[in-house]
Amino acid sequence: MMALFSDTSFFVLAGILAVPALILGLREKPIKYYGFAVTLVFVWLSMGHNTAALCWLAAFCVGEYALIQAYLALNKKYRRNKWIYFAALALSISPLVTYKILSAVGNSHHIWGFLGISYLTFKAAQIVIEIYDQVITEVKAFDFFYLMLFFPDITSGPIDRSRRFSEDINRVIHKSEYAEMAGTGLHRILIGMVYKMVLGTGFYQIMATQGEHLTIKSLLIYIYCYGFYLFFDFAGYSHMAIGISYIFGVKTPENFDKPFVSKDMKEFWDRWHITLSHWFRDFIFSRVTMNMIRHRWTRNKLVIASTAFMVNMLVMGFWHGLEPYYIAYGLYHGVLLSLTEIYQKKSKFYKKHKRDKWFQVIEWFITFNLVMFGFFIFSGRLHHLIVTGKIGVIF
Image (tube, rainbow, N blue to C red; front, side):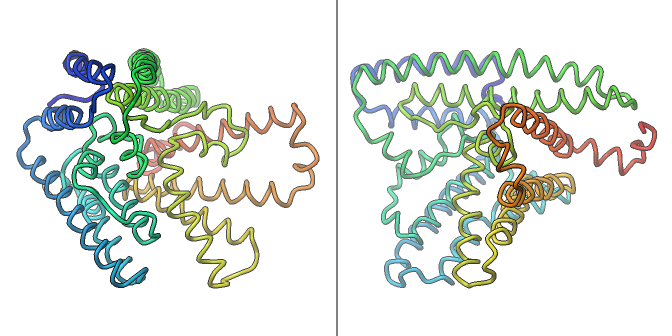
């Protein structure tokens, strides 16, 4: 099995296979067909020639495409019928839900057991939702399968949107623009390698060697090193995924924007795993908000926003997995976002000092530590220490 963006063999092969893409791009020729062929190669290699996993992946993609085509036809005949929409959306996410449930009971290697099912589900569900919104009226087979399988982001994002992706792969890129894209892509790949393989690995080694003892000092080392490891590992991967996609003529959206400079939790989620947080914002948070307003459940804007934040982040927690620490992580951020919204809207002290430098420094310090503690919850170690009773030994 070839680990994308980790194995030396991946980088060697990616470098070789990028050469024809560079030639096509500089000659202003379409890259998409060659890119799709390369994608199939890496999908095959990344699954270690695992026939069962490849079959589940193929079944998932074909099934989602068939569902989308059926829903397109039904939506034209029964325009914006909510029951048909909910049924289509439920069917779209059902493989992921099945996989998560089976994972929770220790049986995830057979049913829908392939890498990237979470991110593929986001792409398919987005299309279903936007068909209901009447934003999407046609889904071409080639564009759909290329979007779903596009190898730079298949396992861990960034999560692209179907309309944006289709525009990229079907437009003619002038050679000067492509040359700039390719140069930027190479630069991003190098940055990503430093992030993931140097900085991420460095923080992981410190965490593994000095952060596992049952002392307060060791616990603090674990908390902060894990947070930085998670960032540099994931942001490094995202840099490389974006860089390679540029070489293949696709401007995959950004996924991180200096999240540790955030001064509040809302800003943090605008900077951290941007494509995921914005997906949830557009397709869950905003829809919960609109439904509460439309059905007049309450006129209190803070209650509406807080409820939407809690629902949004709880769903995000369940998306990561059914383990208690993932759900706790979602609830934790839901509470923080709700409190942030209430504080910023109600506090006279905040409104008076929000532009003061000293206040912004304090905001940053509090936010940074809240984020790091959230990562500690996400890691599962806090849950382990509580369940085993070792948390008492530390304190």
